[in-house]
Image 1 (cartoon, protein in one colour):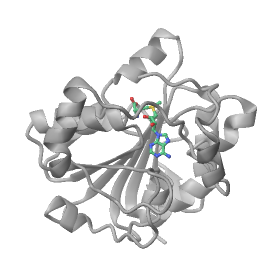
Image 2 (cartoon, helix red, strand yellow):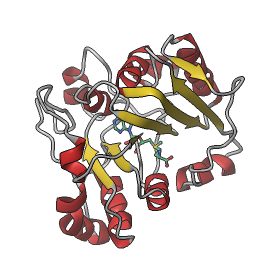
Image 3 (cartoon, protein in one colour):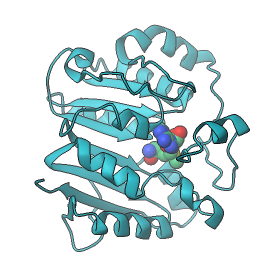
Length: 249
Ligand SMILES: C[S@@+](CC[C@H](N)C(=O)[O-])C[C@H]1O[C@@H](n2cnc3c(N)ncnc32)[C@H](O)[C@@H]1O
């Protein structure tokens, strides 16, 4: 999986549609082939949560009632990973923590197919995924209904004119704050120094969060080395982790 930080939005359709709030992703290939196509056909009923759309195929209708007990078939602490990529981190952690529910939010269809293939092969029952724009998913979650949120290696949008497309900003922090239970954790990681600074600033300035560390967090042991991180290491980039806790309202 590659990401070109210089890439412009894939289509005028996307940028028109989300004019009021730029989306943090580019539309990449949605076609499934081979093992990923078979995985989708085999596992979508088990793992994929279908959501009603309002306009685009990555949107979520505002009146959708996300009922995690119904989707997972049980009530358990919920971990959400935004931009789960190929699902490496989520599947690994879900296997180690069967007592928690794990929801992957990702727009990249082949990535979700790969996640379902891994989760299905491992026989996991505590994983679900949704193909949708993360801020819109957060908007249909109940207040305080989430135990932990992960954002690992969000698209960097490193050109100044694209910075506004970054996922982690004040508006997204407010969304995370609303859905996280008091004491719940928001874990982040990035290989882009300047985005790391932005994350630290956004969360430090938010009255809803407190940093568990002086500034950068030690590497989260649940964050396994993904293929994406391996590329960052090869390119000589430093990885910054952050862990913030939702304070009592
Ligand atoms: C650079 S990749 C990192 C993937 C993975 N977290 C990892 O560490 O390997 C960022 C991912 O975030 C997804 N993404 C970006 N913005 C998103 C959004 N608003 N909603 C859902 N997924 C998003 C992209 O499709 C992409 O797969």
